[in-house]
Image (cartoon, rainbow, N blue to C red; front, side, top):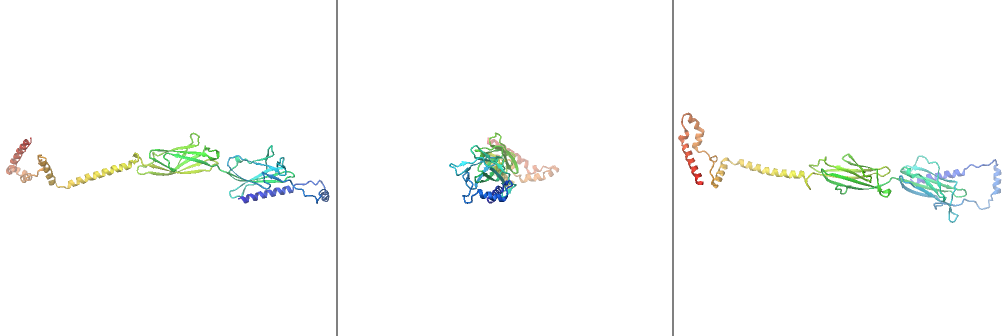
Length: 386
């Protein structure tokens, strides 16, 4: 790219030299032979050769090269001192015959973009210095080549080659958010996460960067960060009430994009982790319900096992155990715990048939007498207990 710049600059210098060499001459009707005679009479070829007075440009006696990088929208002027170096101290030369510049822009690959400009005059100041105002504050980002030429009668011509690069501005940022740690935000479902992004213009004495476009993108949804107080702090409150984390946490990758004209765009990767709702700090409701459910399941299983085991015990064994319990407790034994006698069983099965014959099977088997006797014993027993 630099070779291309120098080739173009040398081409321009050669062009200017040819123009000066072929300036039109007014012969005023004089014949060529007469001109030769006049030259022979006026010029003594044995005398010393006449030459231009040596000069310097900003201290350089040859091509003066300037390489400059500035920020877009930055105002910058180039100043030149074209001096007679035979004087002490060296004097600035003013009232020049030629004091102008031409420029062209380069593609990123170093080739010339468009055409070389026309000549543009420099501005001479009161102290015979010369200013080149390239209107840098209005130029686009890119690379430019500027060729400057100075010339005055009887003085050597001086040239300057300027490599000018205009770059985009940069900014810095400070990110803060609820429970932020290493670009990771940890919050519980239902809580809000406040995100604050402070933008700092590094190219302007670290002043706040205003009017930037700041977008937070999470799950393909965009949320704008707004600078409400016009202080370079852009904020957004991320809500989690509609995020379902009852059964498991949600890990949500996000990205904050910062865009502003004439500035290098930047992106910040963040991760928002939304935790499960908690019944008390550090203990999710889902885990609590699982624990309660497990306890209920265990208790229910034990009860069911107990009931099944009880159901497997024969009624005869159950009644024996109950009778044993009543006896130990000196309680009366309920009739429901007693099995019917053989006679009572016969009456139960065949009593109705005997009644059809007009006979009482209970009397025949003496069951009534036994019941009366039992009733009397029960009363006596109860009376004795008192």
